[in-house]
Length: 364
Ligand code: KG4
Ligand code: ZN
Image 1 (cartoon, rainbow, N blue to C red):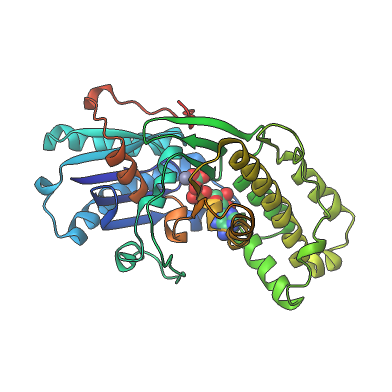
Image 2: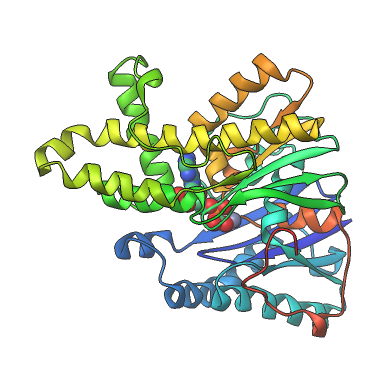
């Protein structure tokens, strides 16, 4: 089955054609990130306007790259939430129109659940297809295996941080998450305080990496300047809003020259605090639910330090749990994982019954 998937929940306009949930026939991602860099974050109306400009060219380009005609596609899939209302509307209304015109079934997808499905894509075989729109090179997963159920997934994106237990593609239960800011939001907000460009995650990660190279990796163990709120609580809840306050307090105690000198170290401190909380809560979830697989997903899953620490921890203490993390290209927003999710939970509904839901949660 071939699914043409559309994703427009935030500042990326994306389309992809996915075969049987795992094979990428074509993928296109247009982003308005440069515009948001200038404003230091996303202004929803600007993002929605850019979606309108990009949506038709992105779908046209995706079909052209796949070498398929529209009538060789079996179904459509589209993100209906959560996200920015204006951005979501562009994708949903476009997909509904195509469904009506082409007489194809349409599957609405939950963006947060769909993020997890980047772990079902075998990027090793398809690197040239998915990397088409990107100039950066990435290391590939060398041993792709599909995740097994039951699985625990940690979804860490710009607006959400959720732990879920997946007993099957249909039975997904929320088991914990942040009570306030998301992990990606914590990266973005603290980066801004540190004077680093948007989006904050990659900026902090890069600054920290340079710091580690300069200090020859000897500093990992002493990066405990910032608090790890709720790390010892019995539940699987997290909290990241205090981090911003702590970083702000530290920065306010510095003059501009000292801040410049300490930017790399402070970036590493922020990253370590966020990573420690995510790992600690995920390990508690693994101990509680005994999954066969552990899956990382969402933009923050592209973070090298997070993956490194997870790999170390699981290899040392949970060898029977298979660890899955998507290729970095598929961690941030794209339509590939929307098409994959729609295949594995194939539930078409009439086009005129589909509505955007900006407040959708991972368990709704
Ligand atoms: O999943 P995503 O692309 O969009 C949402 O659905 O929100 O996630 C975007 C988030 C941003 O907060 C960004 O700073 C973060 O993912 N991010 C990273 C990295 N790359 C992106 N955070 C830490 N390290 C990275 N390498
Ligand atoms: Zn996302």
